[in-house]
Image (cartoon, rainbow, N blue to C red; front, side, top):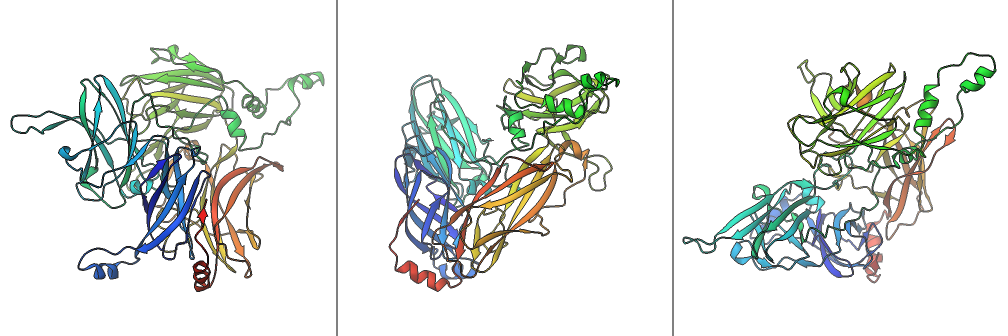
Amino acid sequence: MWLFPLGGQRGTSLEVEIRGKGLQSAYAVVAEEEGIRTEFRSVEEIVEESDDSAQKQADKKEPEYRVRVGVEIDAAARPGNHWLRVVTPRGISDRVHFRVNADRVIRESADPHDQPARAQAIEYPVVVNGQIDTPAEMDFYQVEVAGGQELLFEVTRSQESAANVFRSQISIHGRRGSWFDPDRVVRLAFSDKDEGKRVIADRDPRQRTGTRVSLRHRFPEAGRYLVEVGSLGGQAKAGFVYQLRVAPPDRPSPDTPGLSDWKERSFVRELGDDRLKQLWSRGVRDNRPASKPNREAAQDGESPKEPDPAQLDLRLSDPTLTLGVHSEKEPGDRLEDAVEIPVPSIVEGVVQHPGDSDLFKFKVHSGQKLAFEVETPEASRPDFNPLLQIIDSRGRDQFSSLRKTEKYRRVTSVHLVSVDAKVIGTFEKGGDYYLRVRDVTFRKGDPGFRYRVLVRPQIPHVGDIHLETRTRDFEDGRVDPHRVNLMAGEAAKLTLIMEQEEGFFLPSNQIAVSVEGLPAGVEALPGASSYRLPGSPKPPVIKGADHHLPKIQTISVVLHSRDDVAPTHLPVWITVTARPIVGGRLGPKLTVKKIPLTILDPNPARKLSQLASQPVQEER
């Protein structure tokens, strides 16, 4: 369910408490990445300290447990988000959020510091592990700054607490005593704005919840100031854990990304010079000519033909092409002021003020298929919602990145769904067209509303691939555990939801799926089943869906274990891969996800007796 403290500094050791259900008889804790070593210490059931504790325990559907584990962090460990899992005779748990920090890390004081007069003094740069477990609790910290000093304050919540509606907020207070109250404080700055690229869980309805709240403030006068960390609405739970980081703004958080999934339609994915190469790495590029070149046809006595659109688009999507970068030109509101760009290319600009829009002109041939991708490197949703509009030379809309439904309930008018980070389209007629970039509301603008748009031919490729391991057992809630607990002699299912982009979805194209690293006696078999995400509503009918949505295909892989397979003491890490196949040609191997697999003993009592006779070992 959660752990505390949320993280530690590189090159140090600490004890971590993990809370959860189904953890009885736990005997190990493992990390998903190198650089973290764990030493299992104890497990105990949590009993409420009250007169009616017995009744409360009886009322619980499943008791909660506390696992204590020693964690040693290597000096070279990657700063940022990591994941721990608990191992029990019933299998391996879902993952729990743990952070590795490059700055000095301390723990919030055990003494009350919920009032300005009792604020805990800290020296920056520092990271503080804290917890909001009492309703209306506020944690106060005191920092001493010099005149003109600017500091960056960041509150990072555990992803489990963010999923449980912990909305953190941060305030800066100055001491302004008065005749009535010598200890009176005045709030100088406040923020509760979620930021960051991280997500909670794949295919989860809460995946876009941010995990970090930042506040940057310059102190005009030297003195002692107060930092307050709280929860929106005064909500509190034992699992509301956080890290407060205080540092000068020239010391950005050195978080480095770990193994991340491919993000096809995200406003924060980077659109660089290697974007065409990235896309072709998820497809199969066929350089074989489809027909005779025009020059050869003319020598054979045939009349020259129009260039084959497919061959032209293939040349324009060559991954070795250098993508030129073109900037907006102000004012750019009229078609005649548009900046002319080639295809493919990258355009950059800023929606600086309300009503600001930028125009770019490009030329296409009949039947050409183009894709438009937008990145917002600074401000992003919900603040900046860039809208891409494709219009013809007479100013008529062709298509846009604004997704709509055909109708909403019994209302005949369309219902706006979202603004997409990508839109594709086919141009029936050749000629000049225009790309307009603006804020979706026309009411917002800011110097930080920067954008980058890649205009390119469509590249058939494999998009996002989501792996589901849900078993519908008691431990599988709304968040996918991304692990497999397999009983000897039985089978378990993996479900892959594969998105096929820009024309890859053809009867002749295929995607081959394999599972690597399986232990002896376990095999992967193709399966067929009807699958739908738990709790997912019926999707609405999208207007012009081909412009906005990929084709989706769902397949299953069955993992089957023989009866005589030996149970595993620690999980085995298996890798699910996929390979595109086009025209019989095999494409590059794509790593979908690396997940842990445990083989369970059908006789749990036997496993417990074996554990009792074994010494406690340090695990990596």
